[in-house]
Image 1 (cartoon, helix red, strand yellow):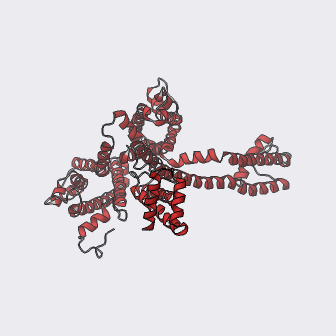
Image 2 (cartoon, rainbow, N blue to C red):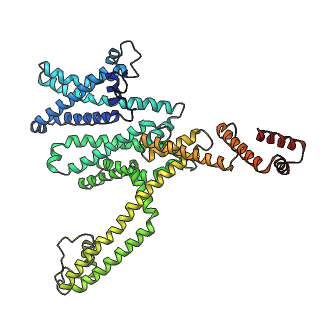
Image 3 (cartoon, rainbow, N blue to C red):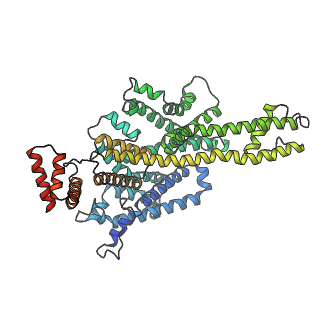
Length: 534
């Protein structure tokens, strides 16, 4: 990151732009600023929505006014700084008056709209209706997200130029070499709606909250159903583009019956049951059923996929640990029944009922609803509780260790793919798409991806250098001219050493024995020997 003292030619505007707004500057704060601004936008929009609920507006008026003041102050500072640093922005610095050009740009107008309603209300007397309009105008702060979304859209169009509509839809839905940052925004948008819908389902179960926000909950559910339905349709439509379905006769049907597609279907069924079935269902059932939307998050979190791999790989060890746990539970329940049945026949009537006490005691210290009263029973409880600490630590330790190992394996596998892709020179289109898709699946940041890429290229160079050093590889002169020259230099050095040890005549004799016995072979020996002499 540039420093003013180290670069006397740098101006303050260039430093501020590099520190605060240039997201390409790895040592700057551009990305942190973007994330902070996005969070403030979301908070301010939620505050505007709360203001339209009279009960909450009256109760939290001071807090809402404070949030509006803080958000407006932050957006104002951002607006002023962006205008000041406009001449350092690549999009405007070529103009004669870069700051004036920025003031009339789309982004500047959006930033101005985000703060204008607040100052308009402060300096001009407005009635109640006008105040409501100004509050609604604050919702236009959502347009500030266009600063990240529009460049991502331009990048997406460039990456998908001359591709079919179905391929573009697939690139939006699934990580591929053509997805770009727009796929990241689409994923985050869907994840946000999943989180919002789950939050509403949980809060809606409180009767007082449900009465207050009934209309809001309804429209949020409608919006969530619409978004999830469109996603479901888009994934079915683009299923033929998925690599695992390309060689299948009915790719869309294969997608429909897959696990993730069934989860997507389950997320939209509650709304259909509630609004389109001719009979009424228990609303409590529908609320709990809508919580199945949490399963959709497994698609957007690579940690879940890694956990599945860990379970599959470590299942024999996990099965052994589970067997020991079940053996201990059954043995403890049997002994508990034996020791406590006569003293408490109502609480230990049989071994199946005693299993509940054994599991609770083994997993924790018990709930107190079933407690032994005999001396042997209490001793058994103490030993069971102590054994539970070690028994449950075994699978936990196995999972933690295996999870870390799997993450390392995934990264190493990714680096190996890059090395293999670069073996034949530059990346072809399919290899590039495969690498980018894997990077997005692993949710690697730009810095992590470039670090692994650099390490992979260095590994490839080390391998090639080692092969050249020991003469195990004959390189293609056109593809590797530098390495070929290095290899020839090594051969010449070896010939010089042999000339010193064997002498000229013996060297020519040995080379003649190796090469075909014709005049051309003799000429080659003469040339090599003369070269060595020099």
